[in-house]
Image (cartoon, rainbow, N blue to C red; front, side, top):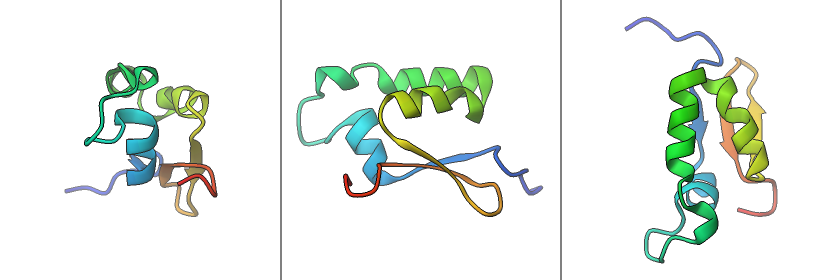
Amino acid sequence: MPRQKPGSQVRITTAAWYQEVVGDPDQPLPERLDGRQQELLHAMDNGGPQAIRPLIEFWGLVWKVGPRGGLTVDVPDGTG
């Protein structure tokens, strides 16, 4: 399998995923999260990693670029 170029994949931390995308699986889905998973998938399918960045930042999550170009979505420091 060939190595992917930097920035072609996005890793979403577990804390960010549950806090701002799908909610706590043991609780009812908060209204503010309704449809976020579909929005994220639609943006990724239609525009790749850079297309999801506006959503991520609008939701209050942090977009981090690692030293080798890896992309990570996380909760802001102190909120996870």
